[in-house]
Image (cartoon, rainbow over all chains, first blue to last red; front, side, top):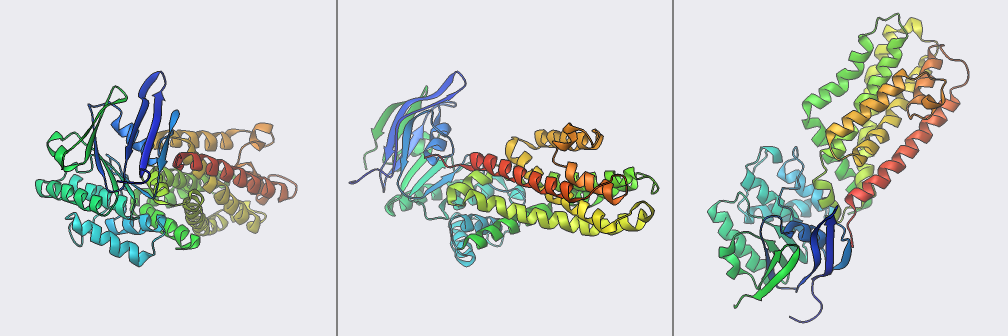
Length: 210
Length: 225
């Protein structure tokens, strides 16, 4: 892959009070590359992803993003009392999409994740996995160049889980930079590179052979 | 998509969200009435209680409207929504709700407390100003506090002190609801003087609260570079 990385974190540090969560962390993701971030609970994976998204300020270091970012948080960042279609219109408007385009694109995304067709329940009343599919679709609505996914398959059934990794292949083939925070080490052969975060630092990066 | 269309979508979705909170909407309508009708018709304290009920209901809708979306708003900003449009959408929706509430409630006061009211139009103006100040009050509180509980307690504090503090003191004048309360007193003949200072105080308070809400909101949904 040539050119500048789609996402680049350099010397990123984050402290909460006296506790240093991330210390001089660095990593990058190229266009058309899928990277998995792994690590124990509390290692700083979610903090790193939120800083990469721009939702959290770094105490030191820089994060450079080239192109629109789609972020899928671990806990669905949705409005409890809006339906899926209303979410599509709201997030589509945020991304500058006209209503018709937001609806069409969003419904196509939802359908590709196996979201029940014609579902009119509000987000609060959806099952965990179904709500997570909406959460994921919203991250993709603005056609992002960088996709940051924090354990995005929580609550998925087996079929949806397998489909998710097939989608990662597709997004990568489309030239997006994909970052997946994951605990499921069995699927690491589906990404190009694995970044291990331990005690607030990137301890290891290894390429996965094609 | 134009800025106006984006703002309209935020207002529409905030409205849909609030309309589905049936208990909240029921309380929004009933609260001012409960405050007002709990005082005998021949006591002027009922006017203050009713207007404070309007403030409480409208500001609470603002607090819950903001905090109910606290997980989604940063994502909307990340998706590209300018901060001021999201806030403006809510402001317009809540102003509509607040003035609608005043339109429902003012005729009841004018009918039941007719004997107490010297200037009916001034009373309606005081209630409208109460709603106009309370919208940015709710937005400011919702933007500043992390959760609904803290927001409710802060709102109880501001509204409660506004009710209990003597209106001719410096403390009363420093509170955002002083202007509407002063005009309310004038409408009932309980205070002399023109309504203009109260109106200016109310509009200035609304503007200051809006600036606080805007500053705090931008901090909350800022995308860091």
